[in-house]
Image 1 (tube, helix red, strand yellow):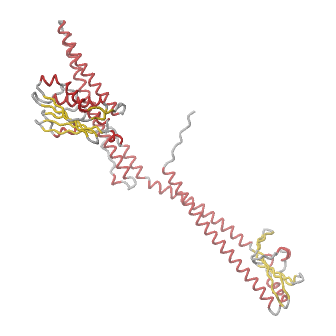
Image 2 (tube, rainbow, N blue to C red):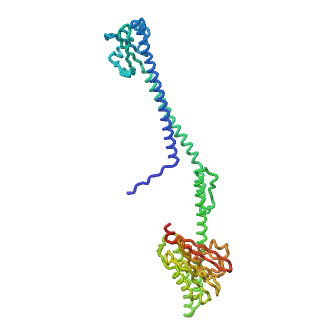
Length: 463
């Protein structure tokens, strides 16, 4: 059972999510620190005010009036059930000598437990929050226990309201960050949408379309350059493919036309057996030419698709070129051509492909060298590999034709279409490419042509 492929998230959604998340994190940290500072400040302020209140009560006890004066002050300053501070003074016998009215109902004396640090203790009852603190003071030879409570219910309500305010601001901030992120992302990706529209206009008949890099942001300029380079390659390949199709049609049409024409002439009236034999022989020759074209095209297609198997081995290069030279001795003697071999060395290559490449070069040299000319096959080796050179004294090639000399079906003289198929040098180039080698050609009109093949050695192939 095949699982449904996961659809990738868009760049826009990822940018919005990351921006909103980052903004939410910053808002949380900022507002959290603000909340902590405000609450901490309020808490410390309450502690200071509570300590001042205890100090004031101690001062009143030390005054001449003593606890009786303090009791009268507490009655006069009593603010009802919502008093901010509650004070109680207990004598050494445990008797309450002064107390804020109503304090015993909310805060019995046993709730106040002295702490080692003297810090207030929070206590909550009846929905109200109190801070309790105990202290002692000596007055008129007696040590009194002072209990002071601070009503912090309003502070707690303020902290809750402030917390809700902070949460509200945080929520609004996150939504605002998301909206800003969507707006900024859409604006930032607008050039990418424009580039997409430009690329959609590219088609088989509009391969000349380009995406000028200077018009796009710096982040998109490498993409624009890469697309332009890709379009250059596609346009070049499309042009070459169109030319190749036209050349192929021309090459196949010629032998087929010859076969058909000869057959129609032969069938126009009764012929003798010898005449029919001549027509059949001609048709067989044309079929052999067609077969050669097809075989060469198949080899080139497999070479470009990396389907050809290269059986590399180390063999004697001098023996290989001498064998190739001997194949052409008959035609060389007939046309008074001299074929000589020079040099020594071993070649690391596929012997069959090596022989095919060099044979094609020698065949070309024989075809385009005038009677009485000379052809030289040389081999030289070094640490990088082997160089095989085929040089002739033929008609030569004009410099304008050299760049396209290894193209399929390309001929320097199109009028000489009957001589060869125009695939020999293309085969040579494909064989050299299969070996990760190189080919170079130099020529002078009416002086000759020199073609050099380089086959790398073992170290060169491994590197």
